[in-house]
Image (cartoon, rainbow, N blue to C red; front, side, top):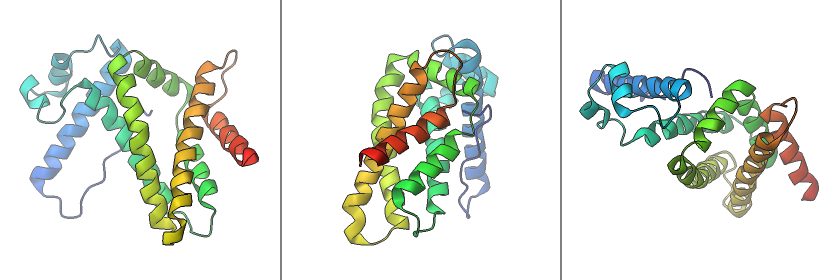
Length: 203
């Protein structure tokens, strides 16, 4: 995960009020991210996030319901970036190859140190781990929807759903293998590419 979150997509007709609200939400998320990584998830209070972001505790709840929501704001932003890249894919490319290439390129943007920091953060909270399982299902649905936008033939939808399912599965297996490795650490992108290669050979 990058140290600074990428900007969220802006609607063409965004007004001043909407822009300020978006910027405030972004600022709170960036502050929360920085404090979580510096002090740990459990040790970072809502009051500390609010104070650092220059808002009141009450105002915080106008943008996020909990600390967990800040974490999943990052993940949703990450997912949106991946989907945007996938939507640029040529329909002449096999769907599974397209998803593999986009996912590998996407995860390669992050250093091993960044990946370790975020992974440790996610593992530090039971509530985060519980919500992460639901997040995988949301990722699968978003991926399937994007696949259907690129490969529009209705008869391909069952196969595209399977591509979405196995792609999320490959990512989960790859991240677990990356987490379990010992010795000199290899990048997560290598594990992800290997997982897709294994999937293709089994298919």
